[in-house]
Length: 108
Length: 114
Image (cartoon, helix red, strand yellow):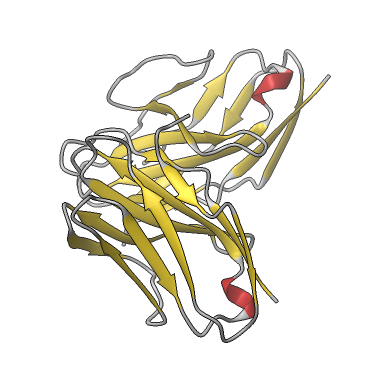
């Protein structure tokens, strides 16, 4: 079965601290993985995707097929990073399977 | 602004009633997706349409139905509403579901069933 697991509901860090939001997936083929972010009262928007291998707003994520993980990392958290983060999997059909989401709280 | 428009933004209705949520995709996008976001279930895929035809179905109840019209806008119909249907309903659109293009989300419709 296709599944995305984000084990942490809430991650609270201080400004300037490193951040790692965990994501593990279950999929038998070659998935396309994404991180979406939802800032307070705003729509979901794409943060990054594994095939583009880019860094957005200082965030990076590496696909580890051996560990079936796609953890989101940022070396120095900023207060404006506070948001809900969703890891998602696209099994080449277009539909996204989302994890439960992790709320990142960056304290001053 | 993602270019995906959802109406209404908020909806309050009573149990047993029926509502229709509307979504206008981004210009040029052929694929429309509906998702339900609730506190206990998180973000759940409901249904996908591509160029007017149903493409994939997720955890959508039989009381719910959707369609995509020739102008590509989509409607999600929720009937015999229950308290547990209270949630944020998102619509997303993309150009082509097979090319792994980005899905753009609307602001959502917040449905409250009382």
